[in-house]
Length: 71
Image 1 (tube, rainbow, N blue to C red):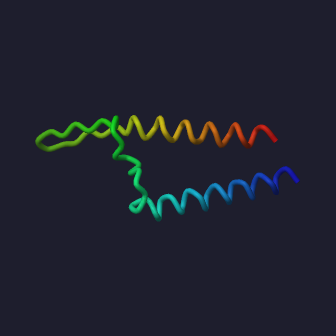
Image 2: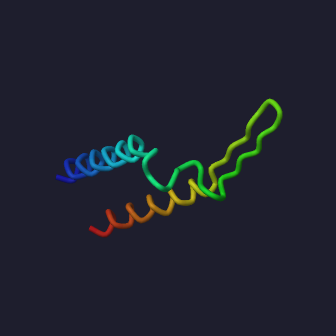
């Protein structure tokens, strides 16, 4: 039963990620364009590091893993 529950949870997470990616343009919070994301543009190159986005995703994923681990 452990493997079955894990696969169901993984499927739900994949559906949620798919919905966020599909509906991402309509969300008020643009992932990858948050204040705190670093973007340095030169004449012929662009350096981009989504620092705030990484921190936000880390907090959300940590919360989800904590909730799953409590069971």
